[in-house]
Image (cartoon, rainbow, N blue to C red; front, side, top):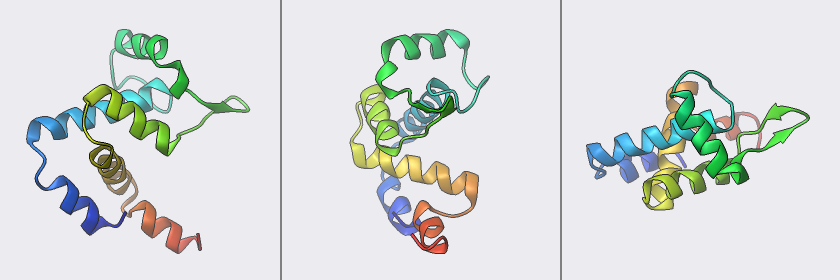
Amino acid sequence: MNLQEIKTILAPVSDHDLQELDIAHWRYISLIGLVSGALSQDVVEADQKAYPQYIKRVSGSVVFNDSDCVAFMVEITGLKPLLCEAWKNHDYYVVNGETVHDTMAREGG
């Protein structure tokens, strides 16, 4: 998904739904242990108990799984997968200064 596609998909989304997407994304990355301290420990522990299927580790290291992230966000928000996918990609862009599409092209993937 390129930046224009992300913007086009997210443009008509309400502020409330954008906030829900943001919270759901933080909950996923907290659930898997990629970040800590962003949410209350009670929320993280409840999510870990309720959604263990989304927690993946390889050799003890956290694994961010794109499809699990989107599935978790859909389950938490009730929003369409395309919106959740766009938000996940939006967050990647904000953190990395480029889209996943750009990263893959730059790395030859």
